[in-house]
Length: 403
Image (cartoon, rainbow, N blue to C red):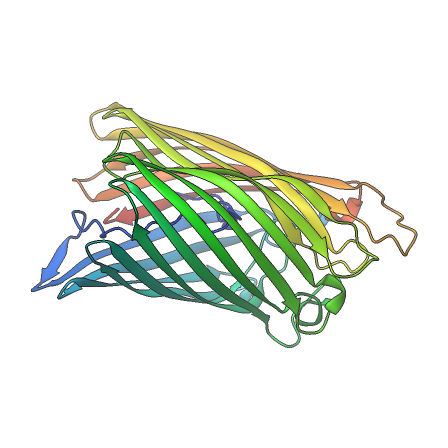
């Protein structure tokens, strides 16, 4: 089906939860379609957004430019059992094509590699991630900018009681924009290249075979390569409920607290709630509900408003109406509440932008793994900064195999 634009971050949404509360459990390989000895693979391919984009550059008013576009997205998940350990991996390539505006064409690569070692009372996991993308990094930046992200994380968990586990986690992520990437005459490399390091302690209790609850507390640091004004330290705490993929409700929901303190006295801090929810509910075999909620601090490219609080939700319903025909409808709404520097006179004090998306579509299933669909989508941003306000309408078809 035709998707909402990928964001941050975000994901649809860039769901900016901490990774705290992650579990070191054995992977579920039931969905693997290809098996070669001990190797299990789940390949899929999607042809998305095959149609018209009426505002290629997210421009205001009469400046809008339209083009014919599509995205081809092959991906594969892999699992390999080696003794008591599991090796896991995934790779996805998004090939974005525009007919007229060739500057917007891109090939984006996403990949992860991990190892999981579940022992009797101790389990350990390590993961490495990589992204090489020329895409919009979130709701704020409208240019498709080439950037690389690399991440490494590790978790050790000890079973202290029959269903209670204590764990520690470490995470490190590096974000690098290519030299020459700009937006509104701002050098994104100078403003947003950064390294994030995080340490977390967790307590997880297995409520049922399909449901667990975890508590976490952590501390993280953001260090910018060229813009030390944005350097910050955060203290976090939260509670997360996680549902197994075999449960009626799938996914996870985390709510927590973040004390975000910039190192510079010229920036205001944030102390308050954060959230990351990604749940799906399938009460009947023909109906599915999806809910996503995100709230956290994000960094801005604008040096006069160096960060903002992003808050929003997305919800959708898909329904099989008869035979192989289904329909889907959804919406999302995100607000970007900017925070100003205290050492300069802000011309746009307490500015809040809002991004809204509405979509609907219909699909036809050709067998159990092939779906052909058509979808229409409208996205708009409301801002007191008139050049940042825009409307975009897309309509196109999709072909999905393997999902």
